[in-house]
Length: 226
Image (cartoon, rainbow, N blue to C red):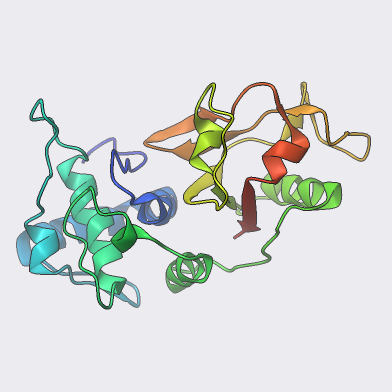
């Protein structure tokens, strides 16, 4: 656990808990360490007003390993990320890294989790206008402001131009949205190629697809600063 910087959802659908624990590790590593020990030894842990209390199904997951016997998600990440998701599931237990429906997190729910550990939700953007992109960049440059986006996974997959209809993958911006070397501005065209890096899958520097125009980028996500 020493040197732990960011969580990694692996092959699971736990992108929203990964975002939550990304921020917890960012602002309070001691609390993260304490909850890990508490989950391991007691099967329950408290994070301010959140009590993590995973079900037996989550504690004993099925289909956890790949064909080569490697885990689909590291044990530490399963224990933390799956415990959070399962705690808030009312009807469907999160019992396997393969579970997709049980891993769905809507925007209001992720906002609620983050508010419970001290973050404040400022605004949600559908990203229909250039002005919204510029405003999100402005938030990104402010101290203690962060931009979270719900994107199509295909945005991060090289060579995949068939974007899904509904965004389904949570990420955190780790750079300004740029056109060339400069942040986008009022002179940026919707057809200009844009660049952005995000936190996802255990890395802080995932890049969106190259040669992606601004209008295609914007049609594939919604964003909110915290």
